[in-house]
Length: 185
Picture 1 (tube, rainbow, N blue to C red):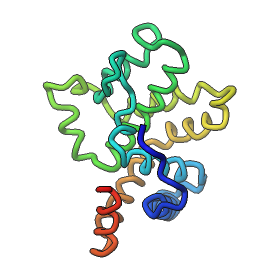
Picture 2 (cartoon, helix red, strand yellow):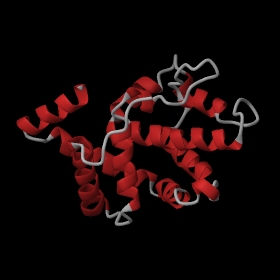
Picture 3 (cartoon, one colour):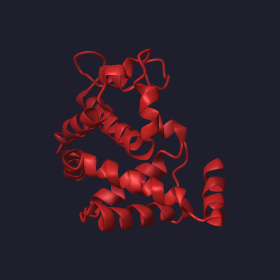
Picture 4 (tube, rainbow, N blue to C red):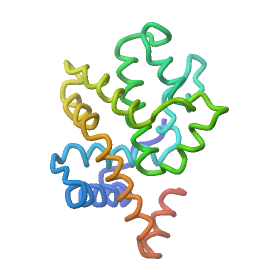
């Protein structure tokens, strides 16, 4: 498991500032729990092991949503309802990340030879966040309203992430080089 990126790390601070600014100014989402969640998601997904954290029974990363759905279904593979929640939350995060930050990759994910070729990433992401949000008790109670909000505002969050990526692409050369160095470390 990769080490957590500290609260004071420049990459986290950059993502927090860009997401908060973009989501309040351009998207109009003023519930700060959403931009905070999304900034944390971006930081978390800078490491490939987090992006592909769902693993099959053999410990191999699952890279397609169709396989994640099977793994997260208690009627098929999931060993518990908590596993179902974990997988659906990850599917929401995974689909939001790809549709918002790298939409050009959807063509690859949905190629005819892949299991995801019939998966609508937007609809599945929204649906998975809704499922994860139904776990609104105990350790999940605090996060459930945020997941519900992400489901309700999925398209706006995609737009916001697309704008964040545009902001990242437009960073001046010294800033962009610094971010690239951080990502390469």
